[in-house]
Image 1 (cartoon, rainbow, N blue to C red):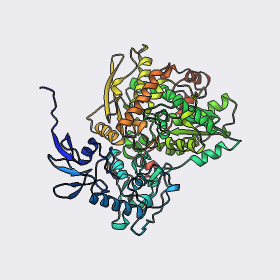
Image 2: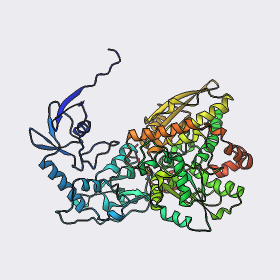
Image 3: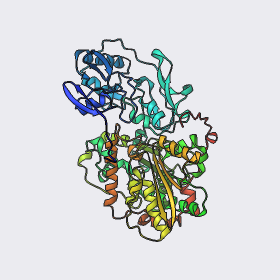
Image 4: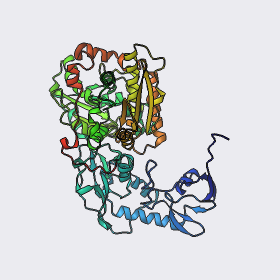
Amino acid sequence: MKGVVTVETVTLTIDGQRVEIEKGKTLLDAAKKAGIKIPTLCHHPALRNEGACRLCLVELEKSKKLVTSCVFPVEEGIAVRTNTPAIREARKTILELLIAGHPQDCLTCTRNGECELQTLAEEFGIRDIRFERSPKSFARDTSSPSLVRDPEKCVLCGRCVRMCAEVQSVSVLGFTHRGPEVQVEPAFKRGLGEGPCVTCGQCASVCPVGAIYEKDSIEDIWNALGDPEKHVVVQVAPAVRAALGEEFGFEPGTSVTKKMAAALRRLGFDKVFDTQFTADLTILEEGHEFIGRLTEGSGLPLITSCSPGWINYCENFFPEFVDNLSSCKSPQQMFGALVKTYYASKFGIDPSKIYSVSVMPCTAKKYEAERPEMNSSGFKDVDAVLTTRELARMIKEAGIDFVNLPDEDFDAPLGISTGASTIFGVTGGVMEAALRTVYEVVTGENLDSIEFQCVRGLEGVKEAEIELNGKKVRVAVANGLGNAAKVLNSLRTGEKSYDFIEIMACPSGCIGGGGQPRNAGLEVKELRAKALYDEDRSMELRKSHENPAVKALYDEFLGKPGSPKSHHLLHTSYKTPEEKGIKVVKTAV
């Protein structure tokens, strides 16, 4: 029949179970389909299989040969066994060797309780190690403002290397040396903070142990909260509310917005605000910037600037597009500037006493807060950044019963937002929010349907055409830096042409950020996205330009979008690698 795609399958037997599966899949895929769990360490569903750890060994019955199931393709008629004495002994030996070379500091490790090596050791009942302890002796790398690299804990699985090179197209990490000296590190023995690392944290999100993790800001924030001289405020990014609940046993896709606000209040913050307020503000500023460029026919395509990992990537690898970046600061940094000017003035608070904290799904936000230009208020815009994971740790440390907290709202006025800002947390959300406002500003008409399905979905690249007063506007949305590279290379060659582009550094956007709960596969990300879209639909106001608190901000303080005061506080500029003193070798793009 026309249009019907025939999928070729093979049939095999695993532990006596008959399994039919698509040709080209692996024995590991077949085992999963049969409901059989095979241990893995180097395998990750978002990455290419490599067969490095050898834990997934299985036995081919006829030959008694042990093969790595994550890379061995299924074959018609073969019989496979996954649980024999030889397999169990081989897996246990591999684990014991790994543990013998691993630090024994589980109680103080950031991954304690969620370490994959620790979990495997428990599942295999390992209580004694038959091999002599041979811990590594490598220096910890703390050069990055966002990430810490601890090579002593590295199990050489290669996940971070594959993520950085194959998904993110950055290629900062690689294997160096040989034999017992082999390790994963940046080239030329540089620290992560001394080269073109974009601080996206995707390496940390796939690391199975504590070899790469976010730089901890918790103690600084406890100190600020305990200082009676400080007025401590907090803002929370949209994607956090769709993932934080997972750290407390909620099903993926559960929005915990109001419990989160209650928890932050109980941690001791003087005011609990919402980054969605300045996400709405970003749409007003960026939307008018786009309208201006579109009218003038210059500076196109305009490319969004909300994602600091993407900004770093553009500056380092595609500097010819720096002028195409929106001059808008990210919502995090806009918020920080306003807290120490507008909010301080409105409520009579000395800005030097304000300590501004953000909770983000992103490790790159820590880098962004440290950028020297982010001080347009006369003070550092954002003093400290927590990831979603760090916030969960703070809540647990404080003994807060998160599950049973009452629902509470954010504080006004910087806690008021619309549904348009909620969807900032998922790829395509910034574009959709911008189109809701730009369309109505340009046409003077109300949208019949404000949901732009054409830019939704977790595909790596999406394209669409939107008609504005008879003019077709070409837009593109990319998530993950490898996909960003594809879009920008198509612009370089002239293959494609766009007017407006949204780029998010992390796969699936902020819901898949480097600071979110780990090991979120595509299904979990889809549920997180659904949570944000559902929250958008539940809100009374769904267009950024309808936010009454943003309107009041312009009336009382900024004047209008793009005003001199807006430009001073809410906009910035970006730098080429040469201006930042970085030499970049473009090997991955």
